Each structure stands twice: as structure tokens, then as C-alpha cells.
Amino acid sequence: MQIHVPSTLPPAAETDRLGDEIAELSAHLDAATARLLELIRAFDARGGWNTGFRSCAAWLSWRVGLDLGAARERVRVARALGTLPLLAEALARGQLSYAKVRALTRVATPETEVRLLGVGRAGTAAHVERIVRGWRCVDRRAEAREAKRRHTSRALRVYQDEDGMVVVKGRLEPEVGALVIQALAAARESLYQRARQQATFNAGAGGVAEETPSVSQQQADALALLAESALDHGLDPGTPGERYQVVVHVDAEVLADPNQPGQSVLEGGTRVSAETSQRLACDASRVVMRHDHEGRVVEIGARTRAIPPALRRALEHRDQGCRFPGCHGRFTQGHHLRHWAQGGPTTLSNLALLCRRHHRAVHEEGYQVARLPDGTLQFRRPNGHPLPEVPPSAKVPADPIKALHESHEAQGLRVHARTGCPSWLGEPLNVGWAIDVLHPLAQRARPSPPEQGSAAAYPSIAPLAATPPPMPE
Image (tube, rainbow, N blue to C red):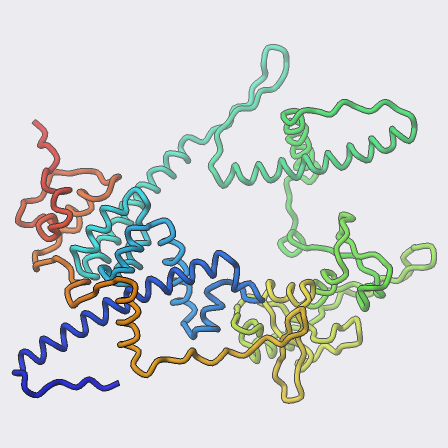
């Protein structure tokens, strides 16, 4: 598009007109960005991206061509504006730029939105960034004080009551408390399974069913089980290599064909699907055991790796991350295009890197992947349709600026060259004083001199700072 400047205007007037056109068009673009963020928020809420993509940002990167970091930021701002209607409206009217809104949504809450909206209207984008950095420092200091207070208040009292019962009282830090709650829940589940087996046995033997304990009694029993388990294992979690190992027992027939009868269970006896076993066996060490017709082990082979280290290095060098369209995740697992249990070789041409999410999608959610004769990978949806390439870009009007103006005028939006202009008049910014005036958690100190205070630089927030804190007598 070409901009034609009438030659009849004097040079200064021509320059001013260009400046006004730049400012007006920028405000229109910000208003259009507000609509874009609204669409992204609705699309994200409906899960429209969940067609094999890891996130809405990954879908945006694939569909729109945004850098993944920029896409994540768009999604973050879109979600934040869902609870900040004043900032969303200011952006939709072109009164605030996307850069200002992006910064303000890092710290804004429904309670502080009005104050921060005044900052955005009064200051430049650089001022807003400085205010937000100062605001976050106050938040971090407040969080640090709260974390220190919680840490200091942690305690656990264990004492014996008059009747001989042991009383346990305490306060735990949130993350420690979450760990204890999860451990108690796991212990309760273990005790529940034991009780069910015992009840089945008693019922078959004609015994009397036991009374169901209350929740608090179950918690007490679970704590006892945790203590017994810890002492039984000597409080030693084992070597790192064994500590986090998951063992799956699966029959060879089931591993080769999920429709065949046979076992596919975890070490503890929990059944998992044959597809899950295939996924885990794609890139894991395996031990082959042979049994006789009565189930006795007659031969145990040596532990072998599905993908040798040298081949893994070549695979990582070739694929450079997850190969699922639009993903490129760095934490990956090797996937056999044709599973080794079905005769597929462990070779570079039969392997592809997939992240955990998409490895599961291929094995357990019906997605398919195959290597074409030219070496490229083709992914298909569960319905058999191929994952499409990036669709062609939307058709752009011959005069996109005119179309944008007409669209906004039809919505009753009146945008001009001063719509997004801040009210700043060039006064110096005192960030500390501005934060002291604006932040509800800031520690108010002795006010700065009026000529240096930030309130003068922000007419729209001046009433908030016009009356400084009273001087101590």
C-alpha cells in the first residue's frame, strides 16, 4: 500500500499529518488486537486447540505463524483480560496499547485494576514497565515475608495424653503439607484395598463384617502405616536409578497384539492397557523371562536397552525434538514406528522422537504416524484424516486499512490521533513514590518533594497521591 502526501501542504504540516495517521492507525490496530485476544480466550476455553497440540500457544504458533514465546504471551494476556474488564475495554477502544496492557496484566487484579488503568492512560509504555517492575518487587517482598513467616511458624508437637493416647498437632509449610496429604491418601487407599480383601474372605467364611472406620480413624491408621513403611525400609529410598523405576509385566503376545489375551500389569498388580505397555516398551530397558506351562520361571535374559545410547544420540541429532506437527518439545521419548514386538527394527529409519504427551496420543488415543517413501513423517487423526498442513493465510482486503476503519466505525468506535496518547507532560518519574501511592501493600514512607513526586507526572492518578501520608509528630 502506498501513502500519497499532497504536495500543496508545507513540510511541517505534511509531517504532522503523517504522525497523526501513524497514531490513529496504531489505535485501530490495538482495538483489533483486543478482538483477537477475545477470540483467543474463547478458543482456548473451548479447547479448540486440543486436536493433538500441547497447548493453545502451540496451535497459534502452527496456525498463525507466531513465535512460540509470543504465542504464550498472547494466551496469557487473553486469559488475564477475562477478569480485567476495564483494561480489556481500554484496549478495545484503542486507549491503551497492547504493550501497556501486556505489562499491566502481569500484576493487575480486579482489586487494583482501576489504579493501574490510570497508570496506563497517564504514562508511556516505558513508564508502565518501570511501574510494573516496582510493583512486582513489592509483591515479591510481601511474598518473601509471608513465606518466611510461614516457615518460622512450622511446628509439630507429639505428646502423650493422660489416657495414654499420643496426640499429634502441627503446622506444615504448604508444599510439605501437600506431600503429607498425598502420602496419607495413598496409605488410606492401601488400607482400603486390604480391608476389601479381608471382608471378602470373612464373607466367604461366614465371619462378621467389621465396622467401617470414620475418616479421622482412617487418617490415624494411614499415619501408622506410613511410619511402619518408613521404618521397614530403613528410611532409605534406594539408588536414584531404582527409586523412580516403573516395572510393567506384559506377555509377549499382548505386547505384539493388544487384542490377544494375557497380562499387562504394573509391579503392584494394577492392570494397564496393552497400548500403555507398548508405549512404555518403546523406549525402556527390558528383561525377557520365559515360563513353563505352570507359570514357573525357567529362564531370565539380561537387561537390554530398546534404543542403544549411540543410536539415541543420532536420533536426537536428526529429529531435534518432538516430531508431532507444531510441537518441537525438547523432552522426548523414542517411538518405534513399527513396534519391536511386532518385528520392527530398532533402526534410525524406524524411530522418531515424540514428547510424552504425543507419544501417549499415538499409542493410546488413536493417532497414527508413518514414514513415507521420501522419508517424511505423516500423522493422522484417530478418524484417519491426515493432520493438515498449515492452511493458507486468510484473504486480505485490497485496502486493509480502509476495511479496518469501516469495521470499527460500524461498531460505533471513534478512533483518532489522540486516542492512545498518554497524558504525560515530560515530568520525571519517581517509581518509589508512585508505587508507595498505588500499591495496597507498599510500606508508606515519608513523601518525596512535590516537584519530584510521580503524582505530578500522572494527572489521572494525581488524586491518589495528592494527599501524602501524615508526618509523624
